[in-house]
Length: 370
Image (cartoon, rainbow, N blue to C red; front, side, top):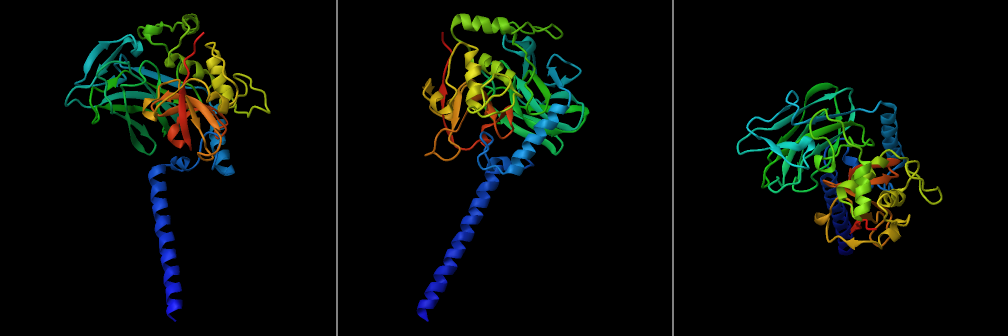
């Protein structure tokens, strides 16, 4: 009888431990997934779709396909747009060669929020991008609030990094209307929050406007046409070195290109690309030749010590099937925790959050030299 009691007790303890483990795993899942309709994405990988079900892949690709049927739409609001921008109490009209339009404003102690008014033409998914100049004194934790269909969603952005080009803040389902869509506040970090410009782009697979900073020969005032970026690329090739800003701007031209695994499919720039085909052609534009294979691309460049040291244009690698498995995916770090990559999950070249990618393995810094 005593043996039976011991066996029953052991079984009950085992069931209890399984129950506790399950609860812990569920809690950890909730923490990683976050809230909102996009939470499930943290449970799969958006690179080579490891862990995704057929229905999840179909749903993601259906969203992208629906976006392609809509006309392209983007709107840029600069802090110079007085009828669409307000920042009471902020320091006005500061200039910088990497500011959009040449100027920007910064937060002051006790000031309210800077707000951008955007015209959302139809209720759809949109990408929000922001621009600020690289400068000393920027906030390490500026707060960006985007008014979506489910309320205002806030995110923290380190503005000491990634200045001088469009930085993706996130994807949002937004309702049609003309309203205060983006707010910026100082947050709790050190430094001053910067309000410069924001861009609204319909869909998640469409690139932001192809603006250049004034320092790169771009817009110097509202209404002045942009200079072609081809001269900038040519100058970069002649100098033998290119900045991460130029590398990502070039890579974003591939956004929307259909995903096709190569081999067996051919690797054709702007027509069909897989992850290593995309990175290969992006670097090739600057006369740096990489092989069309994520495993062999890992052999190039210098290893980046940690995620916190990532810079725009760094190659980021993933082992989505486990650390002991092979490298399965590669993309370009695009700033603010985003990766620019050819994704078999979306079936396109897109920008998405690295937190939705499994198995981060490491990064390599390959600067194009001639």
